Image (tube, rainbow, N blue to C red; front, side, top):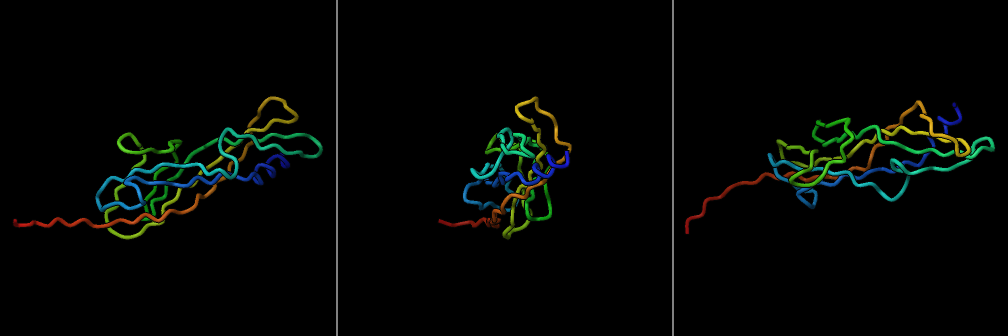
Length: 150
């Protein structure tokens, strides 16, 4: 089991990038901003299978999602949750910024996994790993109303 755990830790994990709506990674103070996870093409994401050989035995490791933690850069976060978020109006991962500025936003992904030795049944690896996704800078602007006399 120690060799399996070590192989699990060496798995090249996919690092999900976070995107926001309104588009362009720009939002307004007090406006509900929607967040969504986008899997990168590199690394293994939940359900994909990493194949290797340990001590001469073919081993398959299949990552599974334990949860996401969304970090909004202003000291607040949401999670863990299995929701990958979404877009307006149905997205369920949202955040409201209370002040203007630029904020480094990212999602941490906690993975677990199952393994199969030489094509046998799948069994749980009793370990997890948390992978931090790359940061996306979100700019929050303050809108000001102006009365115009025509």
